Image 1 (cartoon, one colour):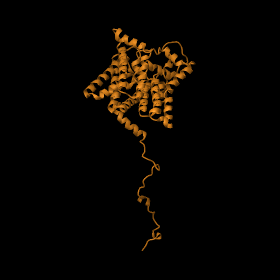
Image 2: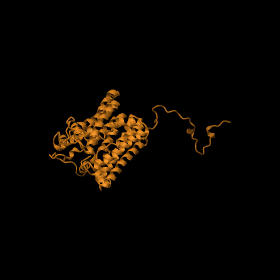
Image 3: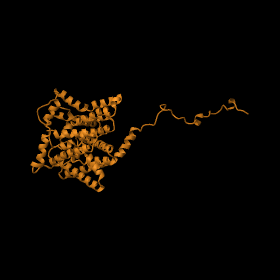
Image 4: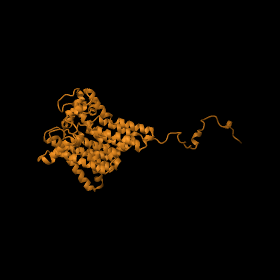
Length: 416
């Protein structure tokens, strides 16, 4: 007996025939492809990879802080004011409290327009929504920025070599002779964070991200122009090396990055000129701070004075001089190692600015803190030596950094 449609019972749910269909292959372009990893997952993996470097960074800087605390306790001094509200930190806090002056004036070393605005703006903004004094907030901003910077330093070393070199590079940067400044109310940590991630973005082909970081760096420190130059040149060279000239989108991105990178620095310099009513207003302010380029004449004179002529030179001035000489040698090694052009452009330009300046001499080791790629030759060499030699070298660097950092704040009578 055959069965017709009328013989099927009408009561009850109809069978779901879709469950029994064979899966149909998806034609290209007709449906969603594999999902890209979400940003939190990507950041989580990157953070786990950088965790040993960040742990080493915190350990080194904590060692320096403990040495400073012990030494300050013996001298009956509190370390919070030393770290949060003295020297340049006091200038930034005054800008956060009262804004900038409106006149050039004639007094030397007195015009606050020499200090770039991003750090005091951040301090003022964060202090408005958090408890505590602005000095404490400024110190916290610097410490958080130093961790972001350390992550970026690792990322650059890991990208150019491997994870071990990235960890060593981060550790060496933490053990810089004047690295205590990284945990002070200064701009070096914030500036280095922008530098590190801008260079990493260039190395990974993210030109607009690199340019945005460079623009922010240009609002943080005068030497931001060195990073802007490196990013702009890299963006323009990408037109020739990657066929950007034949691809309108890539060409537009490269040109936009080249234009965006110097906007922070140029914007502040232009704003100072408008505020003072003269096109060279910012440079006039720098002259009041004795910061003029002299081709390196003063640098050579001070080096000769501290290493040859003065029979009892101050230890800190000797440290600054040795740091400048060592940085020059490390740059030569970086060139010999054929580091990527954007990295060499940044470190070379920053080193040239520091060496050819006729301004104050004693803070120049601090000015070179953001030039962390100069430490890459050392990190690569340490990655290849025996574990015992590596441990001895790092222990020496950490001990020296802890001692010189405390000496810089407790014995040296001027600014770091």
